Image (cartoon, rainbow, N blue to C red; front, side, top):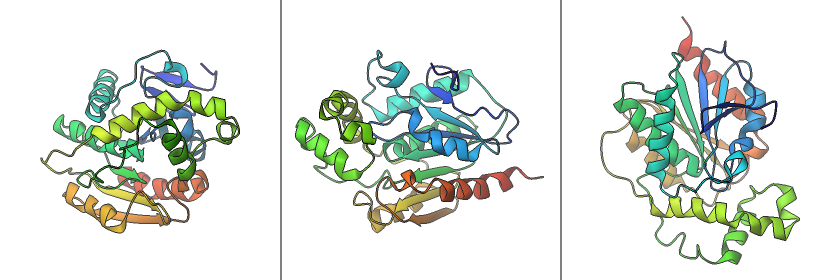
Length: 255
């Protein structure tokens, strides 16, 4: 593991530890993503926020572990790890794409345990109750998976220019797509924490109606923020996103 990365249990990494920060922010990556995706955001937020990044099994330093292809199992296991390592500071959740769905399920578990998050930031993800039938119908087709990834624009440049390396990443992508494919919202209590929906203006994966449906998943405030760019607007909008996160989270602990 890199000397600049600290492990906090099996699932959580810290690139820029900030033990004096008043709030922790847990970041959950997209399909095919790893904890390192949030390194730029972590750097931008440190030391104001203590940024924790999730490393799913089967990638990075967990490459030898079996994939988890069920969103609720991901949330269960991450919740268990957080419970084993309590921290008195408030926790907020930031999930990008698939990570927002995992974050929603994790927030439900945290609230049921009496440790509600400060907020759920749902980035580039439609509301859990919305579903696109047949979206992953071609999940077993390698070329379809690769073209989908390239179209969304979130693949690192070193993978895009190396077809062999890109194909080596297919098992990770397919495992996460299976998790997304199998997820169905189960009606139940709404969240009590605020939801902040963050969407790229040209994101083909989230319509206005699908984003608006986040309002039905919380009894608290739901706000919407639109950024220039597509599904991976965050790649070029880290300063703006960091400002939004600081503005929303730090006043919550004042006084």
